[in-house]
Each structure stands twice: as C-alpha cells, then as structure tokens.
Image (tube, rainbow, N blue to C red):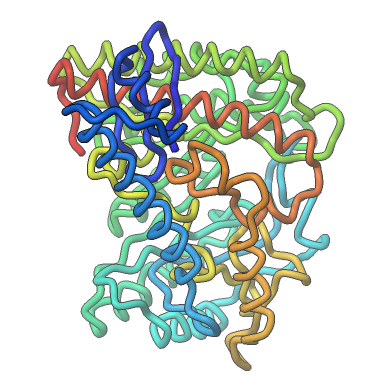
Length: 434
C-alpha cells in the first residue's frame, strides 16, 4: 500500500493510488508498518496515518473500477487522430518502426480520401471542445498538396462544428524550406523535428538517406536557427544503444533555444538496437543529469520540458491518476491512405485494424483491442501504475519480454525522479506552470 522511494539522496513515502508524497521519517514508517501488520497503537499519529491508509485502500478500489469502466464497449469518440499521408520517406533511419511494422504497406493519401477521413472524424467527435489532428508518415511533407488540403478543410470543418482544431506534424526537417515553414506558421501547426544526437556523425548514421547525400544534422540545425524565435520548438530524440549520452544532446538543444524535448526509447527487434542492462543503467544516470539541469534552469526563471521526465507533472500536482498512457481506442484513432482505422500510427497492421471509413467501425475487433488494453499482468502490482498509465497497446502486442522488462526498470527510475522534481519545485517555490 506504500512505496519507499530512494532517489538522489532523498527518501519519500509514496502512496501509489492517492499519489500522496511524504518525506521519509522513521517514526512514521514504523507506524505504517504496524498498520500493515494490523498491530494496534492508538495514538494521534496512528489515527492520522490509519486514515491515510484507509483512504489509500478506497482509492485503490476506485481506481481499479474506473480503469475497468474506462472504455465504452463498441464505440469511439474522437478528440485526437493520426492521419498517415504516405508510407514513403526520404530517409532510412536505422530503427524506424515503419520498416519493422505496417505489413510493408505502400500508398499515398489523396485529397479525396483526406476529405472523407475528415468528414468521418467530424461525425464521430467527442464531447471535448477541441480536436487534435496529427499529420504523419513516412515523411508527411512529401505529400504537401494533401497536407495543405487537410489544414484548409480541417480548419473549415472546425468552424462549422465549433471545435478548436489543432494541427501537429512530425518531420525529419529535410524538406522544410521557407515556403513550407510559412504554411506551418499560417495554420499554427505544431511541428516536431527529429534529431538523435549532438554529434553529427552519430546522428547522420542513425538518420540518413540511402546515398548519404545530405546531413540531416546540419539541416535540422539550420531550421532551428531559422524558427527558434518564432515558435516553441519541439525536438524528438529516439534513444538507441548508439546514442546513450542523452544529457549532452539535451543540453546542446536547450542551449540552441529548444524548450521542449521528447525522448523515445526505440522499440526494435534488430540486434543493433537491443538494449542491455548496462545501457539502462547509463540512461538512469543521464536522466538524473537532465533532472538537475532542468531544476537549475527553473531557478533561473526558464521553464523547459523533457518528456517523459516532466510529463504529467500537473496530474501529480492535482493527484489525478493516469489510467492509460494515451486515449487510443477511446478518444483517439489513426487512419491510413485507404481510410482504414487503427489504434495509432505505430500499429497500422492488418491485425489491429478495426474498420474503414467507407464501411463502419467493426465493433468486435474494437472490443478485442480494448480488452487487450485492459489485460494487465504485472502493472497492477507496480507502485508506479498510476504515474505511468500501464503498458501501451503496441508494447502489449510486442513479444520481446526481455526488452520490455528493461524499459520498465528505466520508467520506474524516471517516475522516482519526477517525484523528486515535484518535491523540489514545491519546496523551493520554483517557477513552474502546472
């Protein structure tokens, strides 16, 4: 019912269902242990802590029931979506999930199908007052005609339906010229660029075209310089065993003016991309250094973010459990160029499709995927369950148990660091917007 967290020379008592955090105290710890052993000790400390423990148990039951009732049985109400503009890409990144998954698909999204997809989405909107449309690939800027049409038609439908429509895209930046940047700025498109290392040779090994004719490192660097004073830059860094020095990469990007960095641990069965225990231990130390750097910048009045380290900090502050890692299958879906529906951009495979916009949502397939999301083996007993949200669907369907175990070890350390950061922010009244 409680977890003692020891991180960066600080110890905390953490209640995993209520998300309450307390500084470690031997006397309080003794009372906790006595209560767990059902040993009575009627004093003021005992009564207070017993009440906290009883509330923790009630929250455990409530969280479990809320999780089980999370999904509607046979429907989906869309507040966010991934639209795949094409499977083709102008790079051949060493770890790309499109190369491992997607059943070797091809296809380019036409304007006609894009319009049908958007019409379908707006017929299945959630009650939320916003809709987030993420334009993906492949490299989405290779299909610029349809890209622009989605921005135009999606904005038009948003006005008709009184929905705030937000657009996001992820790009390798190779095609980002002045004309394309102007289009992104016109529609206020949030764009995430990818850069995997502060070292040119490492980045361009992981992210290169077939002919090694361009330096992706130099291209991204040029775009950063061009737009950093116009927008809040977001950079995606895919972590592999070949670029473990993520603190140096983060520091380099922050000093270039980037304020938001997304770290993503690559999921691949390729031997070169397999993590070992020593890799994970290195990453734990790297995240600790990033943690210290972010807190130092907060003291200087600068707010920068690092996912997953600072992710869901507001929910921790408000004591709101994270029931699932994302809203896929409930408020989120993905669409390919033929209008087939999937849980997300990563899972565009024949065995995860649950319908087509020209026909209907296939309730039995959707229900199967939802049941798969609800099935948990080790997550329910993990102290970080409601900080993490449990396994995402793509991880549940991945059978590489050794790699998944290593990832969970790293995640738990990151969540411990998040608790440390939250305590530091509150204690030092550091500048942070929850």
